[in-house]
Image (cartoon, rainbow, N blue to C red; front, side, top):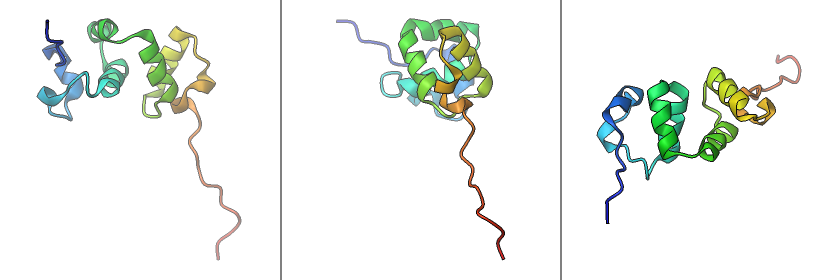
Length: 103
């Protein structure tokens, strides 16, 4: 039985500058890995991600995550035919409405 590789290839290291790269485990943190790659990755990293994750995984990230860049969210929504109104990070953020002057 072959052991499944759960580590990331070295060419992805620049996209995970803020965490200890050697400790990232695809099986334990799949959403973190995929979100980082689709938000900041280049063509090579996206092709790699598509060998590890399904289009449904990408759709799930786009329709549930609030912390993707608007550019990334718009791109994937367009490519996948997702209505931008279903993309949380493209919605206007909540802001408190003042109820009159404060004395």
